[in-house]
Length: 546
Image 1: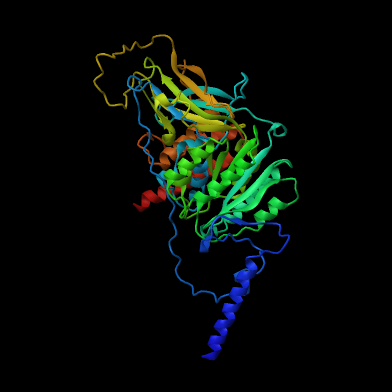
Image 2 (image 1 turned 90 degrees about the horizontal axis):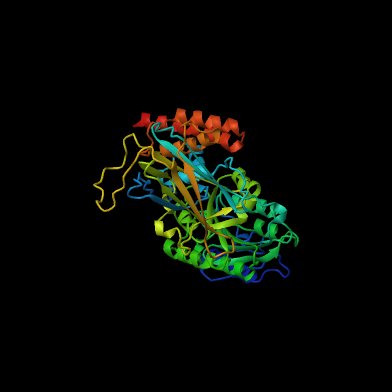
């Protein structure tokens, strides 16, 4: 028994010695941590910290191999598709713009894994807006241009498809304001995978390398507790930012709520008036301690947005992605949501589209479409289900809406049923007090009017303008760019098993996509073609297996 007692005493002594040393980092350390709480599993692990407990103990014996448990706990909200509306009953269609692209990157990842995505993962507007389109720059002093085109609907040839496209003004990198960024990084145990924290570190490194010397970066991390790894630091002050990123490792549970609060406080204390003030949250979205209620997190983000600090949310990883949480948070508080599934996607977001990611040119952008019942029998907004607003919200400047970044394009599609074909809207006895006489062929030939309302990045009052669109004199297949957007929408309709997919099929999608890809040689459009072919193969297998 004595050797066992002696061995236990030795281990206890080693552990106590390690704890004393770990509580007092070496003088002159480049990174100083400020713990926000003292929970046992709250310690933020920084690789290279002197005398960690793990370094004091011999490595354990390798565990006996067992069957891998099922950690596939990704969470998606269900989406109830927008239905057809009659302009006699609902002449106005109102929604917030959405520049999020997370759904496309996540769908791509799932298809590459050899599976079809769950329907809740497919948000058609995010598939469409992943791509840029050939819209002209604004030339009227406004922050974005508005472009409207109508052509034949490829999955319902008797219907029309109207495409509304916005193009944000492109700011030259040399002219942008200084940036005050706070990286809010999830270092909990759920991030301990190659496509999670290591990819986060690589992505943030890419962004830092694009910043200017005068820009400032702070790093806040959260696990069981939140902590400030790096106070707000000028990028030009040596390699402090990059060194701090490299030292991060993952452990503990996920106290995302406290981390968000700390990150906002750090951003607010270093606020640059008129500059870029943004928290960049990188996580798998698994907030399991602290503020875990989605509604409370939303309230927090909406409150903090009033301090002129924006939020960008980026999802990482597989098997545990809480897409539903991050998508809901991004709908509030001047926020955007992307998903990073590879170094290529990180490069697209943080290098190629860096200005769009960081620089807001208009906020709280709302669209309201007024349909003329003389020419429109019914209409349906494709996608944007989580962004639909009440008609009275359009001019209510207290209502939050989406933001547009420098150079961003935003596209919305409406399927329109003209007169002369069967309407999908169930007939309802009209009110005798609100009867509207439909005179086919009457003038004016306006099919619809697009109303837009937005605020300047630092403004509180909405600015409104209107753009009318005429009924097309001749119904055509549309431009190559139009056909590509239509092909992406069809892709989403089939993945969602939509009741509105009509005659859509994988071959038609590929034909339309080829036209758009040829018109604009683009690696992202070429990749889309491969995804269409992959989805077609997986769909055929699914049918055979039934």
